[in-house]
Image (tube, rainbow, N blue to C red):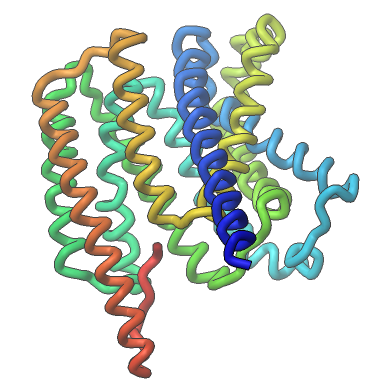
Length: 331
């Protein structure tokens, strides 16, 4: 029996590792491909570009569901009212986060964007504490303070600094933090399976992106004949769409097979690798001040994650003693 359990555990670990490696490769590849398409290829329509990944996610998940390969579990009982009040708000914040995040690549270098992503926990904690979904903890607050210092230092050292790009980046992260807060508040412990999650969630985000495209990009896309760029090199845009699907699918896979904490740590490692690739292979320029600032941010990130672990243990202890906390931390 022990041998079987050991083999099962090893198989789960291999499964999780494959999800992590697949996500890291797909995510990194999509970052560089999107940057290339938006700048080098001249397809400066960020919302249209990121909508391709969502459209692919919905299309592929729909084919899998309707072919019977995956059966709907929680999704089969969803009503129109429930969808409108639970999924649509999440889709709105996800669309804003995706759109603004893609616009950032028009103004900032890949390496600098990855450095700014180190400050995400600061934004997340601010939103969750403000909305009452998380209690302020001394060690997480210290970690966020160190993170903020490092991020500001990295920004100060950036050669091609543009305020509009930085503002868009943090607006995107605030939208993502609100999406997480709304997800926790509306969904609670409800979790969809991988394909089912894409099938349910992708249409809402795609609908809001389409509204954004018609409001902000359609005129330029039409006047500049932007669709001709897709027709000239369809392979690259199909690849971007497929990588978008893989990133969405594998993100859910990594979190489901490991934990949200592991996903955050792996994300920071991946960001560091992307910075290194950007500098070595694509000759992106970074300064010593940026390296020092990013290093400080990584120390702050470690303090923050340790604080989250301590906070989770304290919450578990209070619950085991019968003391119900006023809020639960978002892992």
